[in-house]
Structure formats: structure tokens, C-alpha cells
Length: 353
Image (cartoon, rainbow, N blue to C red; front, side, top):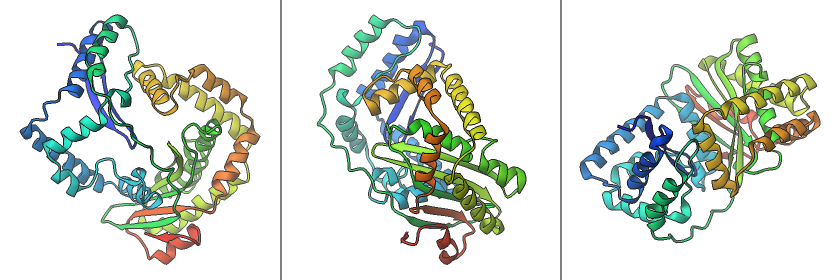
């Protein structure tokens, strides 16, 4: 009756419930979300149906080489941290939890001191404030939850022998934690290494050599830890070529990027950032993450100013620190070779996983 959409997702460090609708229906849409969070039905039959959906989703991930490689990488790099755990959980746990388990979890975690409400767009402010106070504001305050220690990067090698059409790998090194002062330089460095079709990885491995259809880099920033990762999928018989080329590109980039690459990356990152904020959904996500992880509302114009203030030397210093790091981790899923084959591509102090 309201129109719009309602959905949710879980990340490593938070769960987001969201609705998008017309401004005149904003209070009604928010009321539905608040009702779900404060008085969930948790019906036994629906719980069993959803359990089956989640188990099927977990099986779907097991059929994806890149997903298997990434999950194995995180588990090996952060073995004693929640960041190393799969978001979906494991089959044994999902199969075992009960209605009481879910209810207890919500009572412990879904409390006003652990929630952030973000509303963006044209809406009735007084109606929103009144609704939040009446619903979420009436919940009992939860016990304070101590944050875990910052996870330490563990050099590692994880091999998953799977019957995939292609072999997938994830090669990682320590990145930057959330809020790091050099995060704007990281945006540009990531773009230059593998963040787009003009990146070094894409141009060399796909366009010039045709070694991999999918190849890219990414940076994950979490509380107290970060991960810079190279991901690729390719024919199993090309593993040596792919790893050699990735290694060569990382070593070359550690010695510096060109002014042309720097300016192109800055222009692209600025454009992507600006255009990415053109929807209310994107703005809500941006505001929510800022409040949740930094305790403040970051002015988007300040991000553009930070990008404008960067120099090529800033990116080069970061490239040397990140890409020149000898502590690396490698995860391979598909038709894998013996462990000794992969050892030259990671640090000699690798812990076997």
C-alpha cells in the first residue's frame, strides 16, 4: 500500500535495515521497521523456512570460486577475530539455533545505545522524532559491549581444492583501518592498481595478456584493521603466469605511480564519489556509516577537498608502505597445486592454514 521497498543486509560489523519510499510515507515505512525490531514475531514455521533459505545461500557461495577464496583468506588472515568469520555463519550453527537464541540475541544487541537511525529526503521530522521516541526509545538500554582487540594480520596460505571451471585467488597485505588519515590516498592507489578498466592489473592481465577475465583490487577498512586485496579468476593452467604478473605489478607500483596515473585516478575517484551520492539511499548509507564508525557526520565536501589536496608523493609513500610489505597472505580456490608452488609468492614466515 505504501509503495517503495524494504530490505536488510548484514556486513562484518553491522546489520542494516532500510526502507525507501515516497516522502509522505516515510513515517509509515519507518514504523514498519521499528515494529520489526521491537516486537518481532519470530514464528517457528517462518524460522524454519528462513533457515532453509540461509543454508541454500551458504551452498550458493560454496559454488563461487571468488567467494570461497575470499572467505578462506579472511579466516586465515584473522583467525581469532570476528572479521575472519563468514557473515552467513556455518551450517552447524545455522542448523542448531532456536527461537530463544534469536530472541536472546536481539535483547542483548538490539538496544537503543547500539542503534543509529538515519532518515534522508523529504519527510515529516516531528513525526519521525515522535515515532522513534515511542518505539526504539522505549527499549531497555543494553549492557556495554567491549570492542575486541585490533586483529593482527597473519601471513598465511589457504588452499581450497574445488571442482570449479576456473581457479580463483585472493592475495592480500595489511591495509588501513577505518578513519586512517591516509584513506584518501588509498582510494587513488586502489584505483591505479586494480580499481577500474584503466588500472594496471586490468590492462596487463586482461587487455594485454588475456590471462584473466576477472581481475581487480579492493581495500577493506574495519575497526583497527584493514586489508588490501588482489582478486582474480582464470584457467588453472595459468596460475604461474597470473601470480608472476600480479607480483610484478605490485613491485613496480611500490616504486611509484606516474603523474598521469595520479591525475586520472583522482578525477575518476572524485567523479565516482560525487555521482555515487546522487540517491537518498547512498546518502543514508554514507551518513549511517559515518555516525556508526566515527561518531560524527562527515561533510562530503570535505572529502572532495581532501582529494584535491593530495599529491602524487602522498600516493607514492602509501604505495611503498602497503605494496612493499613482505607480510602477505594468499588464498586459492579451485584446481590447486602443491603448497610449495605458492610459497615464493608470500612471506617466508607464512603460517600454514
